[in-house]
Amino acid sequence: MLEVVSAGYSRHTKPFQSINVQQVYLLRLQVEGECYAIVNEMRYDLGPGDLLFCKPGDRYQLYILHEPTAHGASGDYYFGIQSEDGWMAAYRAALGERTLLHTGTDPTSIALCRSLVGERRRVNDAHPAILDGLTRSLLLHWQRQAGDGQSGDVYQRQAAMRIKAFVERHAAEPFKLQDAARAAGLGISRASQLFRHVYGQSIMDYAIDVRLGIAKEQMLISGSSLQEIAEQCGFVHYTHFNRLFRSRCGISPSGYRKRLLRQD
Image 1 (cartoon, rainbow, N blue to C red):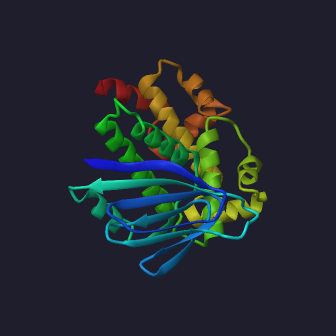
Image 2 (image 1 turned 120 degrees about the vertical axis):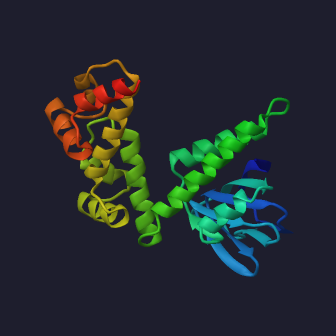
Image 3 (image 1 turned 60 degrees about the vertical axis):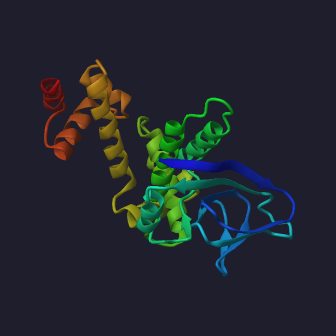
C-alpha cells in the first residue's frame, strides 16, 4: 500500500528557497507561475504542467524566481509518498527514471490532486485504502499524460493535450472542429495537424472513438433506446451512429446490445 506522508498546495508570492535531501518520493506539479529546481546538481526550469519527480536520497533544491514575472505567483501541488512494496520504484522505472516530465494541468489531474489533498487532511477519518486508491489513480493518470505527450516539442504536446481534453469533455455534444481548435488557441488547420502528429489520428476520429465508448457504456447500464443513446452520445442521426458502430466494432448496435444481454 502507498502511504501519503504529505500532500498540499503551495503558493509563493515572494522569493523562496528550500534545500533538503528527500526521505520519500516527491512529486511536485507546477500549476501556476514559474520557478526552478536543482536535483542532484541538475537544474530544471518549471512552468505550468511540469511534474518534478524526486526519489529518496535525491538532493532537492527549490528556488522561486526572485524577480517578478508576467506569470505572477508560483503555485504547485506536492505529494510525499512512501512505498514498501517496490511499487513506486517500478513506477519510476516505467517513466524512464526521468526527474522532469510534462503532464499538463488537465481537469482530471487537478480534480485528483484536490481529492487526494482533501482526503489526506481529514483529521479523524482519513481512510488508508482511499488514499492509496486516489494516489495510484493520480500517478497512473500522470503516466498516461506523460506518455501521450512524448511526440513533438513541449508546445505541440500542450496544444494537442488541450484539444484532447476538450474532445473528452464535450464528446457527447455535437461540437465543431473549430470549437476544438479554439480550445488550444489555434486555427483549424494547425490544430488538426498537431493533433494528428501527436496522437496519430484526426480530432474527429478521436471524438468518434470517445462517443462510441460512451454508447457502449450506455447500452450496458441504460434502458434507453438505441436511437436515444445515439443522440445522448453526440450523434445527430441514428443512421450515422449505426454505420460507424458497425464499421469500427464489427457488429451492429442492436447485435452488440443483444450480446450484452446474453452475457447477463
